[in-house]
Length: 292
View 1 (cartoon, one colour):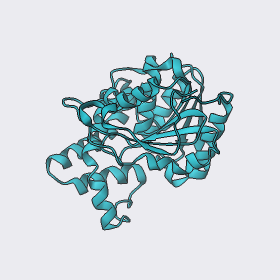
View 2 (cartoon, rainbow, N blue to C red):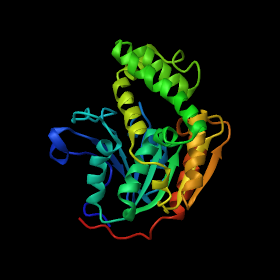
View 3 (cartoon, one colour):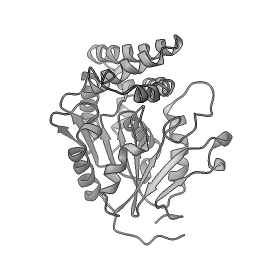
View 4 (cartoon, rainbow, N blue to C red):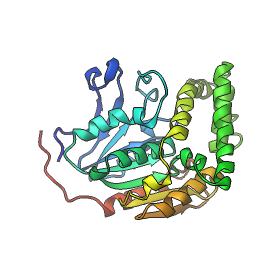
């Protein structure tokens, strides 16, 4: 049960988070608390279709991460990390008297893994859609480090674009890598302008994912029922991370989305949402009355 009801949409108040920074948290429905973490350069609205399909059996909690959607910029200083991104999420989790489900895509998948590692006792299930745990490649063998070099060139291009105040060029490189060549060219001028404003947070996300201070053995201790989804046509670094985690996590299974790439929740929502919902339903708790 929840210590306080979570339904419809709420915006967390200033006092909930440090230094007066506000994090927008969209919550819908009742039932098992289910945290939905979006990818870089996105927002919690990424999960609207999935949330609508829950049919009231899950309480969908979809935060806009720092500097995304309706949330403020990260209020901290120094090096950004997954721990900093996770802090307000964990604050919410610690106020819930119920087991939770974690769903994360790309950067959000790395965030979900971090939270599962630091709060394993309250996680009921995990769903990961190509988690961008690049730190695993950095700490791997020669083949892993070759793939790490591929993704590092994208991260370097983002940082260089920021340094040169070429935010449009940096976001173009980022989106074309993950979404496919021609993605940027197909966007409207207004959409490009909006996307380019998020480049600095993209750089923060890369930093957090690359510098996460754990190796693969840390995930061998996560025995939660875990579904890992992977696009058939995704970039090699993402597909390899999926294979690494699938082999290391004792209760994980991999499903591949035919014809999809890294952005399968956007391009193949029917297949992705069906797989997520089935996994969550399999590990749903029995309904428990809510109390105020």
